[in-house]
Image (cartoon, rainbow, N blue to C red):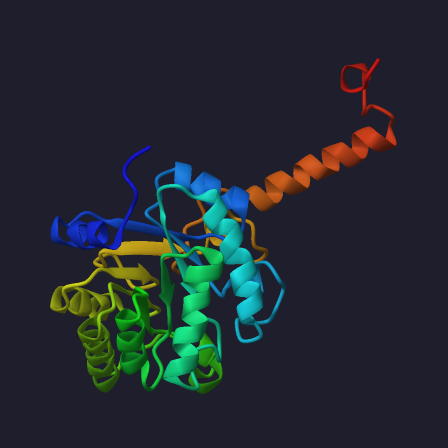
Amino acid sequence: MTDKITIPKLLEKKQRAEKITMLTAYDYPTAQVLDQAGIDILLVGDSLGMVILGYENTLPVTMEEMIHHTKAVCLGRQRALVVGDMPFMSFHLSITETVRNAGRFIKEAGAEAVKLEWIAGAADKTRALVDAGIPVMGHVGLTPQMIHRMGGFKVQGRAADERQRLLEEARRLEEAGAFAIVLEGIPAEVAREITHNIGIPTIGIGAGPDCDGQVLVTHDLLGLNPGKPPKFVREYAQLRQQITDAIDHFKHDVELGEFPSEEYWYK
């Protein structure tokens, strides 16, 4: 087991041009596997609303659901840094409420940082969290909690004014004390410009190869979700089909009386 991942170590990785790896985790066994594989950051994403709970999008996810899953992930990791995702409306109303909710991730669940998507006032809230001792990962570009305003999951930053806006948002988050920023769903050249113009790590998802690190939803990477994956996803396995085949085999054996056979019962 290598040394514990800390925020200073992530900053050192950027300085040494070493890539950072981040994957989503929502439960204890997955956290164990990812941690033992050497993944740097485990993100307990509000994507669990869609991946685990079956919601249409991330908006219904509650603080209680996030705390529940983050606790399980924290119990399963030893080395990785765990980041809890601030769900919709947990940081939108006031700085006081933002700090209170973020503090729950640290105090109750055991996370070491929180992530919040860019909204108006995000820089001020980031600064307040950092002042309270809560590390913050920012998130700009395609921000799923704003899908109704964006008109769906659409690439951001193609127009010149949008490109400048994203760079400014990233700079403001850095100035406010964020230790890293997720860049989601933006053109590769925009992600490259942001990465080269800020001093903290960028973690890309659908943002090209030049970010300081990459993140995917683990269920996408493993081929567990139905349907065609998004353009930016590489499926490294096809576990949904493998699981289906295994269950079909079990069903067949039970129905024909072939399971349990003698080696699987007690005498």
